[in-house]
Length: 165
Image (cartoon, rainbow, N blue to C red; front, side, top):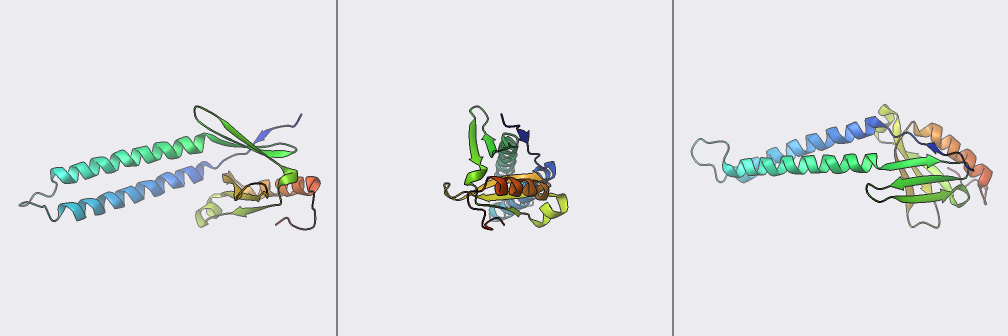
């Protein structure tokens, strides 16, 4: 039986996304209030009922998006076995995708500027039988994992002719 090791996801990546969402919503709420309340400003009142409604909707959308981000981040898990990479997703129901190493053609790392500074990134695998790429997102220290994946690909590869990147 294959040993199953969970791949660590970076909490820094999650924290960065929350901070980015926060800044974005603050800016959008401010712009929305400025644009929608200036034409209707009566007297010296800066905040009207309309601007308070806009702020309330922005706050509601912010917390909803943060909740969805957290649910997605928490409920997607990656595992490495001797013969495959497994992706588990789901909150109430669970989906498990298994990608055997003998079907993976190549694997590369994608890191943003913040990912490089924070030590996290995505591993992108090319699997011909899947439309598109298979992505392992927000992996902590992805270069170490990529070396393990490349070793497994070399050991299990049907076509070891240098297609590994």
